[in-house]
Length: 176
Ligand code: IMP
Ligand code: MG
Image 1 (tube, rainbow, N blue to C red):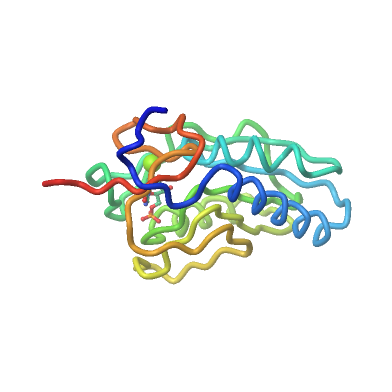
Image 2: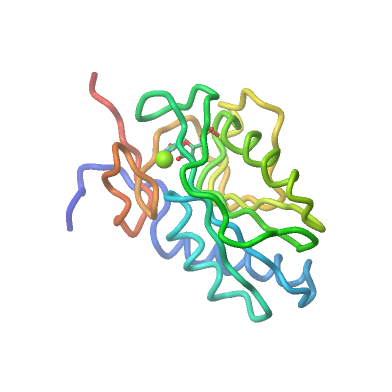
């Protein structure tokens, strides 16, 4: 298969097992209360697609797309919305679905934006967490995997828009 040169950090089966566990935890915590998932485009779309099919109660989905300024592998703190929510989240239980929490700049900005819309509750599930890189004081409510300070691609995560289609999460080591 393609990209065999990239070392696997988390294989597809390991990811699937963890997504099932997260879904069970989320289902238990919300106890069937209607839930609005808000996926962060584009990185979280594969994770969201797998997660949502494991939530056996009333769930609706919306997406927000944000762009961070910086180079291809790190954000600088400047973030802007390029696609807003389609529907109001006022008074709803909202769960943000993130691909990865890195410096925390993106999530801190997003949390402020979404809280201003007055949801009933606001939590976040992130597939991956890189706490060693954190600059802003943010924490996820649900974390799939805590990973070391490596740049990863696959399962929705990109480098310069490439690799999102890989079924596992692999380490991209840059040569320069
Ligand atoms: P933060 O603002 O630094 O927390 O960065 C969050 C965003 O940066 C994520 O939503 C990803 O789009 C991107 N990102 C951070 N680390 C990685 C990585 O290892 N691989 C791919 N994208 C990453
Ligand atoms: Mg990205």
